[in-house]
Length: 146
Image (cartoon, rainbow, N blue to C red; front, top):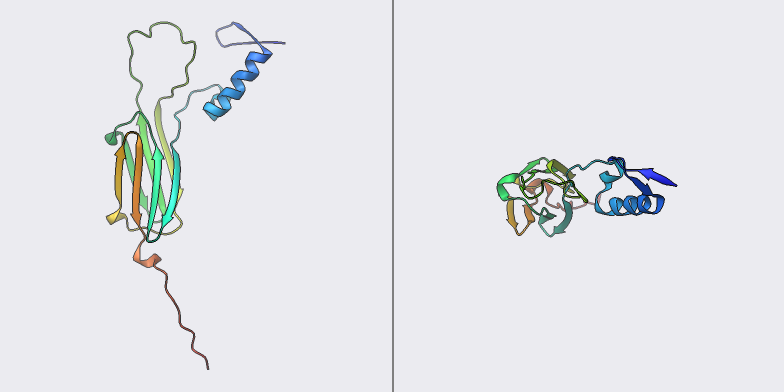
């Protein structure tokens, strides 16, 4: 069985399945045949009185990112800009890099003190350190017996 590429070239079923499998691991949206911006991979850890979020965002500068905290929701927005490369005037053989804006929002396990939150961005790694809000502090309720 042969399939057709967008350019009109024929592709074997084996090549089509390989492209499908590779695309699902490289970028899930490539299954739809479009290159949409990738969202950053994120780790979130609760460390005592802090919530620490680490996101991998290669190819950006700190000024390309916007971080907002509203209540218990953290949002990371950014834009990956396409560089105009003169030497790439030919047709693409592979095109896996994606461009455009992205937004990723998370519900935090508790409210945080956004006034004292810190953000560091180094070598494509964003680290957010957010102290828990005082209202989220654990309270012990004593029980009185009658």
